Length: 168
Image 1 (cartoon, helix red, strand yellow):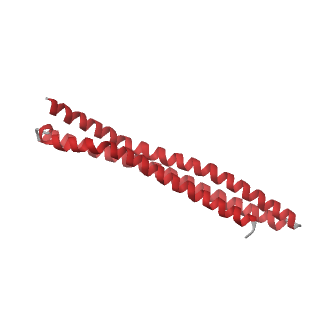
Image 2 (cartoon, one colour):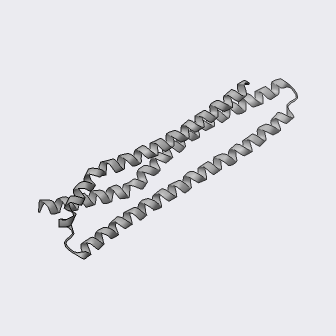
Image 3 (cartoon, helix red, strand yellow):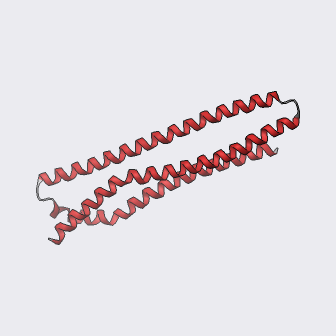
């Protein structure tokens, strides 16, 4: 296996690793937001019979929950769209760069020129993959944190309501 193929394999591994890290970070952020609310949900469920004394209270509570879910879904979908647009841009840039390198390779008159073109391409591709992978990882984490915020806020509000009714 040539050095260039090994470099390309390394770049592919780093890109895969960056994407996996992004997914893992998003999952962890979502799990963190969810797990902090599990006890609060249990307390809310226990106190719900006392907190909702009338139909209007139940309707208002349900509407608030629905609004929080819709807001979180909107944030998530916007983030996924932005993520997809970035990935599409990266793919387009990669195709253009590959075409340019292929043109350069066809123009080479010596093996040494071809090796230099290919080496430069491998190094720049690796550097770009690391930088873009890190950006995507950070973006995935930010999307998960931002999308979970309306749900967390609604959960905090619910717990405060139920805690107030239990203390009364």
